[in-house]
Each structure stands twice: as structure tokens, then as C-alpha cells.
Length: 304
Image (tube, helix red, strand yellow):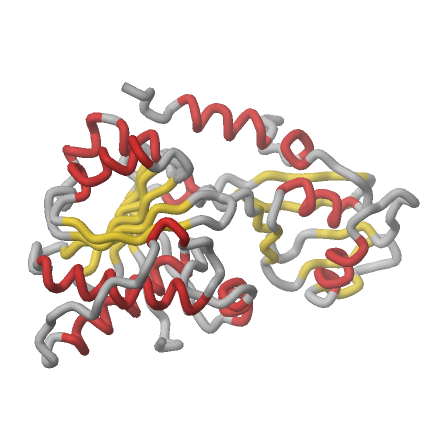
């Protein structure tokens, strides 16, 4: 994958990234990211591309996944809603120009399932056996191998590591193997800044809102030098300190953005004591992270 700068355009029509967003980036491939609730709603049929041949992924927050292909996701997902209660998010990949055909998405499904099984980072048991190698002209395969690379890039930027070996996805992001993605159109709404404070220590960050509980603490945030006797995150803190410099006798300063698996871990590591990240991370107006997430969830379409 190229290390040159690659720009993604993210469109969030209703301002709620937990609900639905569309991602495009320099090719004909478009990624639709949909919550399960959105898939239940009548709005799904209104999306351009949901009646076209598509590769799709279903995932949950616990590391389970399913990969399939379809002639139209809007119709296909009804069966998955009825028979697969575990998934919470769908990634649907279609051609912006409508050029993908059944043979194309069958080939994408074949190489995607193989890649997911080889990475072994997600539970792919619902997929059963790898599909047989589909019939696709040899001269078409390089084009769709490149489409798959674009799909992998999209998912990596979403922190969905289904095609990466355990631990390698986050490492690629942290080391900059994946170039920075420039977000447009309502991106600020997708990244509200939360603050955690304790005796002059101020850390700031935002939830990823990608279906996981991940929380990003931003470069420049401070970490308390002292920790309480009951502090339970020493190993995590030691790793984070590798990305810090000593600012003064009371604080370390984070020298790069750092991704935590949960907001409470992020808060505890920064403040040096056990913390409930859902209540201690707050917007400037005092809104807690939990209240913010509850408000977003209330905006999701109701089940019909």
C-alpha cells in the first residue's frame, strides 16, 4: 500500500456518525458504514448503491465478522437482520458508477474471506468454508485486487482490523504506514473534544464512534507523574509513557495521538487513578461522554 498522502472524504448526512456515513477516496469504490438500526429503517432504501452488486461485511464489537456479496444489500440485509442477531455494524462497498457486476463482487468476496481467515483476527465461523475461486477473466483480476487494497485501506482508517493480523492494524496506524486521511463535511461533528482534569493535569481526546469503545487521547495531553496506590493500569501506562516526554515534575506530555481500547482506561492512565471515563471525560460545556453518546443513540432510527 502506498505511503503517499491519501485523502478520504467522509459525508455524514444527519451529523450522526454512529448512524450512517459514506466514505470515498480517489477511486470508483464507495464505502457505506451503517449501524444495525439504520439497516432496519426505511432510510436504507433511499441510499444510492443499495440496489447494486456489493461486497459487504457485518461486524460486532467483540471481534466477530461475516463477509458476503449480493446483487443488492437493501434486500439481502433483511435475512441477516432476522438470522444474525449479533452484528451491530455493516460496511458495504459498491461502485460509484455502477460498474461492478456479480462476477466482480464474487471475486472480491473470495479474496476478502481468504484474507480474513488468514489474519485470524476476527471470528469468521459464520462464513463456514472459503468459497471456491470464482470465474473472473485474468485481465480483470489485477483491477479488483487493487479495489480490495482500497477496501482494506478504508477499513484500516475505520479501525476495523479484520484483514490485519492481531496487533498489526493499530501498529500500522500508529507508525504512519497508513497515510493521514483528511476528513471533510461534518468531520468536526464526528470529533467532539472531551477533557479530563485533575490538579492541573488536563488531557483531551475523543471517542472513535466506529462501533468499538476506543478513545483517542490527543497529542499535547498531560499525564500525572504520580499514581495512586490502588492504580490498576501500570502496564498500559508504561507503554503510553514511551510516547511521552517529561514536561515538569508533575506531568508528562503526550508527544503523539494515542488510541486506547476504552475511555476509562484512557482517563485512568492520564489522571493516575481509577476513573470512570464515561463520566469524567467532559465537553467544554460540562456534558459527559456518557450523556453525549446517549444523545447520539437517541437520534438513531427506531426499530420498525
